[in-house]
Image (tube, rainbow, N blue to C red; front, side, top):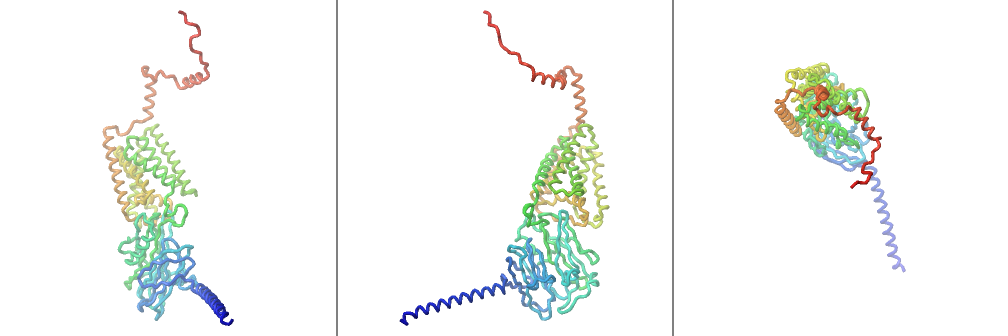
Length: 569
């Protein structure tokens, strides 16, 4: 009997031991999950980029070992396309040791004999974040970016970017001198005179919102410090405000870079690069992927079609040209006024602008029909051409000169250039009108293309409108790089304008300078009909008599037709 019960005992013992093992394993796993919530540990090396993914509700440890003794401080920087991430020195995420954003960095002073350190990375979103990170070392003679940070006790090497419809602004904290491990820097008030800040702008490929492209170019900018492919914008000294404004170009990726140079020690350091697309990726409607409202597309598509017609046939169909020019001039003025004086949304403002443009264009055409004043019409047309010419001049590097940051000087010279064109139209009215038709009409085509793809030339007039609407736009740097699409659009603009001017001039040179007054022609035709008996229209009754006869015919009884009596043989 004993031999028969032994296997049952052994099986129960094994069953109890299995339950204990599973229970122990569950407790161990729970403890591990509680005490180690991190998604992983990444070993970093100095100056080497790491592309990592931060999962939501997880902590990623970034470790750095074998720090050289010559390095005095480190700057850890992390970049994402638009999602926010947190980086901190500790798991407590204290305010003075934590940064949050899409381009974030932390300054870390090294202590004597310290050869390793740890950062903690977390996602500030409810989704995984793809990012690139790097650790840059600096020595004691190098300036500390953002060392004179008034808002915190720690240095702030970040560049802060803000944008609106008109301008993009970057700001950063002044630098301080470097110091060796275990030492402190001098007071910031005595250091400013020895620093110089070089501001660079690096444009990403046009019409490209790829995350991979952004990460690649961010790494490239940090490696060569932006000097190889970046465009130097401005050099700031200690007496100038560490704040620079640029023109906003929604959908165009831009990386901003600031290099601080110590003129006494001949050393330099790099602020954390920051990027923007001047638009919001997170919006449900009208985000970076769906830039351009339907109303804007419809408005400028009709403008482009009308501009193409005016470019080749404007002088022949003079009333159509006047309607188009009146539409443009009144539309620009009315949009600026209603934007400054009302709080209507964009679609409402654009709709009212189109309505006012149609009414104004019809009134201009009607004035020409009634009065036939060539001087008045050419003044309006020449002003539009002068506006485009002045906008082109200030769109170049000339517009970035400090003297033109004064609104008085800018608008005085702008109006002077605009009014030169009407003076030239006095001597050559037909030639000037044909040139205006070609240039303005072809530019309408450029504006229509801009609704589908980014073109720099559309901002020739947009920048002038922005400056009229925004008081702070005078401080913005409006000059931008030419890219591939810009060379194409320049060719299209020049070819359309040149061919339109040539065709119209060759076709119209055998005709009178301008069409005769339509009202005078109508009056002469009316007088001719009244006195010419042989003209068939002379015998047509007046309108009142014809209407009366029509009404009488409606109520007049019809007499029966046909034979009532038999035919006589």
